[in-house]
Structures are given as structure tokens and as C-alpha cells.
Length: 331
Length: 189
Image (cartoon, rainbow over all chains, first blue to last red):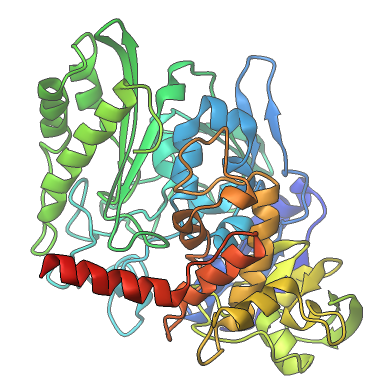
């Protein structure tokens, strides 16, 4: 890893001012992904701005009943929070299914959003990569692409977003709060991450110097039936091949509201809005769930080695919706 | 730059570059080589230490960020010649073969016990509102909770048995498993 200067800031304003002044700087908090990237020269910042001691460590209930997760709350603390377990079990389950206890202890809410793809071509500097060096090409498209995206890809990048937590946050319509020297702004979660298009080097809609301060969950009664289903190559400590966050709200037998999002399929957590729209007002049965899964994967464009993901995603959607319609729990 | 670290209750002031990881600070600057470097990328768990009671990968932590924190390594678990209960249990249950992953495994188990006491759930916990108590921790729970520590010798059965012993469960005798499989084979035949 290249050397850098280290700067432990004591205020949010200091953090964003200094990051805006030095655009070769990076923020560090948990560091679980960043330190690893530094080691293989994927990032070569001039300065690391240590924000880990700023006051963004709390989970608070807001006056309107929403829940505000400070950007520096650890992944472990989110999953173990009783409000999260009770009202947003899908989020607790998503976090617990990701990484290992050691990583979850170190990793923060904000950092989880900003972790980068684990595409092996991105990680290996012997290969070209449009995400690492725009314009150099994407060897994954004609290479080993078993773990890559099937939705929302471009000719420049087929990488997937690696987070589990973010799939649940997309399904829950969370809001990301960010700060800059100009003040604070809010970004709907589904608009936070980007599709690759012709700018795959940009993962998120953040301006230089902007810092995530919190993620806000709106009150949602039906999120209690939410589930998270993750399918991977080994039983634990592995990234998703396919994951599904689903929550079904029933009135009698009829679906009143539904949330559906997928991980492991795209450059961002993939919200399946057309499938959700189809399900509203329908009865919660296997034929309708099967049809919803068909709709969710309608636009899928599998690569040479990942066509299995299309069928796997459909079956995962059907199972996740079925378990949620039965009240939720461990899928 | 100068950094003061608190390791196993003692303070050390080091002159290091900001890019030095906690793992390298422990091994290369403090000479405390109990903590092992396996993959150096947060994938194997050999470098697991406790920071303020929580288990972390020291290979992914920058030493400069750990000032004022209470760092416990494998060297800090025994008191004098008296081994920690978890260390005793690893010896008693053959929880290792080559021993390289063992310091990380033991630190992970020490943290695991505290996590379960505090009601932490895991990915296999059936009821999030009622996570298992230590005495009722299943083999599946133990394995999931230790999935961040790899053992290339595959001493996993011994490691699980060591945890079971510490939490007051009866670890299955390895012999019992052999006899069971012979009986199963006989039945199938």
C-alpha cells in the first residue's frame, strides 16, 4: 500500500471541508473494504480522513416514528438493535447473512453503502477494468463471469454490488442523508447507487467531499413480515450469487402492499418495481408469485457463465414471497 | 508518526507510518507474534484480536486508528501459567493441528461467548427476539458464528467440541461418531 497522511477529524464540518479541499483524500471509518483495496493499490489516496470518532454512532427514533441509523453505527449494532429486529427483521437478517462477525463488528452503515464490487477483474490490476481505469475495457464480459450481473449491465461493466444490507435498504425505501460544506441533503436509497452505463467508475450519486451521515428508515408496519433469502457457494462468509429481500402485506388473502429487491444481479441493489405493481391486489399464491418472478427477470441479459442466475433468482423470489406471506422468519 | 497503543493492559508508544496495520504493528513493531498473518485480506481470521471486547481482523485495521482502545491478543488471555478456559478446551478437544489459525480461533471463541451472553443473533438464529443462550447453543449456531475463521487442517470438529465444553455441553466423543458411521454403513449394507 502507498503511504498517505492521516488526519483524525473531530467535527463533521472539518471532515467535509477537508475532503472538499483535498479531492485526493478519502474518508475512513471501519476500513474493512478500503484497507483491503489500499493493499492492492486500487485506491491511492493522498490523505485518509478518519471520521470514526465523530458523533454518528446512535440509532434514534425520530418524532415521526422513523428510525435514524447514524452512519458510524456498526453492522453488528444494527442487526442487534431491538427496534430493527422487531420492525425491520429483513434488515437484521440481511446484515447477519453478510460477511463474518469480525467484519460486521468493524463495518459501519455508511461504509457498507460505499463498499465496492468484488469483481475479480476489478481487484486484479493485471487486468484492464473500466471501473478502475475508465476506457480500458471490461475483460469480465468475455471472461469468467459466473458471479456477474444479469440486469442493468452496460457494454462497459457487468460488476455486481456486493452488499446484503443495501438490498434490504432498497426494499425498505430507506433514505440516505449526506453532508457537504453546503449543508445536508437527502437521497432516496434506490437513487443512491448507479447503474454502470458509460461511467462504471462512479458507484454512487455522491459529490466529491460529500459524507454519508445517516440512513433513515420510514415507519412501516408490514416490514415485520420481511424476509431475506441469500444463496451462495458456501453456507457462510460468502457473497451472494442471488439474494432476495421481500415483504408482503396481506389483507385477508389479498396482497395490499409488497416490497421486492434483489442482490447479486446488478451494479446496484435491484428493486423489482414492475413485479411489485403486478402483485398489488392479487391473491398471495404460488401462480402469482411465479408470475411476479417472471416479470422481475423479464429484462435479464445473462452472460456466458451466469445464465443459471435467471432461474435461481425466480425461484428465490417465489420462496421469499411465500415465506413472507406466511408471516416471515428464517427463510 | 507517534501512536500509543494499549495492548494486553500495557501501553506502548510506537513511531509508525499511517499505513501500518494493527497486525503489523503487533508483530513487527511490538514483537508480539502470537497474532498470525494468514491471508492479510480479512478472509481467513488468523489475525483476529479483541478491540474493546469485540473481535476484529487486525489485518484490516490501521494501527493509528486504535489509540485509546483496549486491544487484547492471544498473549493477553492466560493469567501467568493459568490458561484461559477456551485455551484449555482447545487442548482438551484437539481443536488444532498445525496451530497457525489457533490464536485467531481462540480470540474469536472468547468474543463469541460474550456475544451470546449479550443476546447477539446470527444468520441461523430462528427467532430474532429470542436468540439462543450459551447452554442451548447448537452446533449449527457455533459453526455459523465461527465462519470468519478458517482452519486449513480442518480441525473444525475439535474446535466445535472445545466451544461445547466451555459452555457446559457434552462434546460428542469422536469415537462415538466413528461407531455411529460404522453402524450406519452396516445398516445400509
